[in-house]
Amino acid sequence: MKKLNFLTAILASIFALQFTWAQPGQYEVVAGAFYFSPNSFTIEAGSTVTFINVGGLHDVNFIASSIGNNDNFGNPEEFYLTPVYSTGPSSPVEIGTIEFNEVGIYSYDCAIGNHAANGMIGTIIVEPQGVYPGCMDQNA
Image (cartoon, rainbow, N blue to C red; front, side, top):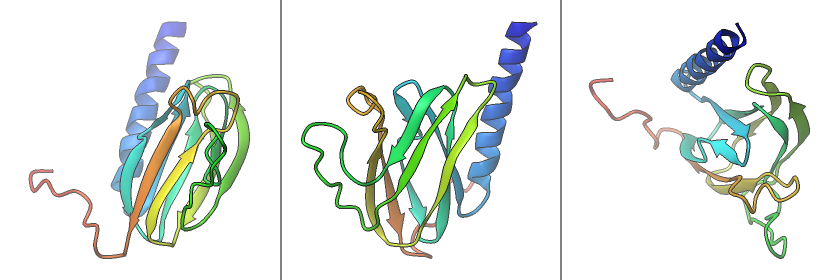
């Protein structure tokens, strides 16, 4: 029964992620054990990105790199979403939502422990409205 509940939660999460990507200007990034997924993507200015924790304790840091000398990312805007804890994929928790209004390249990481050093980093590229057309596959 536990395996069925886990599988159902995973499938529901995948469906929710795909549905969110279908909504213009609204995106989700999943945070888990040393990863953000997707960890790099392009959006249009004015879009919102919601960060969802599916296991462990994670924050979202757009201020300064948690690796090395804590160098400032130099993002067009600085954001920080405080840490939240999730017990696992069957109980995802929203870390927070950010609206990106300034065009540019945004780097971010998880500043908890050594998460960033172990690969929990990401990039969001924000294009001007009307420039990034989204899906280019005419068969989609």
